Image (cartoon, rainbow, N blue to C red):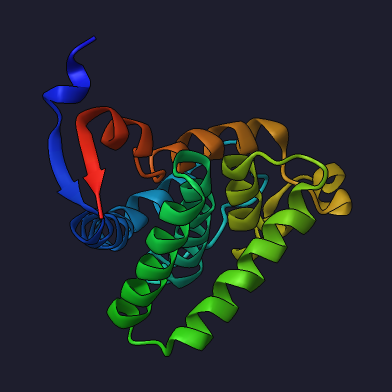
Length: 180
């Protein structure tokens, strides 16, 4: 009941700084393991070739998915401020002009919607995007290969992996009072 009075304060600026840094760091450190998990999945008929150095599509997927979650947790004005700041910081960190960064996020967001229609489940969309961006369909048995759709067993495993790349907004809101 009195939890709100005892929460630590964090500025939006510090929160976004942490969000951007931790997202990029997490992908940099974990992608070789993700590539290994994909390549070792028993649902593939042929062993996929996912280069552990080719994390760029995965990074864009993780960034886009995480940006999609911000409006779910913050009010209309705060979410806009957080998204704008996150876009600027991601662009700066990736050394990409802000306009090109936003365009790339828009392309991935559109891919999510296309691959996942009519579902609105972002994690599921992220998993399907990984499947398509790394052209994993060619390694499946003929049935799923011809459908150009991921084997549902593989997709379920990949969903579990992708959930680990979602920023813990609920936990932040629970632990901190976010101030402008």
